Image (cartoon, rainbow, N blue to C red; front, side, top):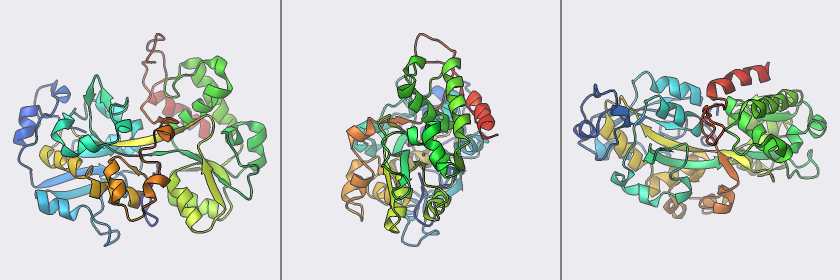
Length: 397
């Protein structure tokens, strides 16, 4: 999804218990039952002594980055779970790390969650056992990327949109459409200064654009593309390549790129927008008329968790109002728990990041993992994530 604080940003831009429910309560080792990954965890047992996480930078802060930023130490004191974290630079890396079986849980973005669920790497949780779930924004619950067959696979963390950011002095008039980066004639005006997110999931941004501008393709969901639709999207991205000066995955580098004028328009996150504006840069952003893609992360429990109860306690802790206020401000996103809005130091934080704003939310097509099932009567003919990865390599050349 997406960044950390202004000193540490989420790089590259953004597994729930293979024990059966009874073993989860006991905190024992993983089950030999091949179907254990589908067993729903229904209670929390005695916590273990440690917790091993895979997370985006800025999600698990213990004061080592900034002494004033710490929501880990109190968790450790209250639960006895010593937290260890491995930062993931990309969703692909996080999936690989989770499949080593060395980690208890992960903060997974929507382009990773279905891969983890389908691979049996995570297990569903009865969210009623987590006291803070009831206060989570309803807009972030029961979504395709965190819920399968009516089972919830984790705790929503927060969300953000992939907005169109631009330099007001260079891009005139103010853009209202993604055509400024996708229409060859318009994008050519900014050749070499267009920026795009560096990842296969960016294919969905182009698909969302074609959904409006080539309706004859019949694109309904930018993550469910059959061969004809997919080929049209990839052709558009290959053409856009001529105008792109930088594919970014590090928000800090994108901030520098806009600040020094190397980039003037492209997809971004609200974090970069706010950071540049705070420095007096002539920057603004918009969700264009076609809508936007976006991200909503989910804390998930590993199917091979050695410390399942510590992970369940962490999932509840990270969703508490105080911690949500801390992490959402530090990271630069809308909190999932709307009670956090009363606790943020910047009282305008939730307004800036559109927390609880259903109208804003409805404009976002949240990242989800592409699979072959088109979700309609076309059947299993859509391009899956492996196809997206291969095509993205071809786009970048």
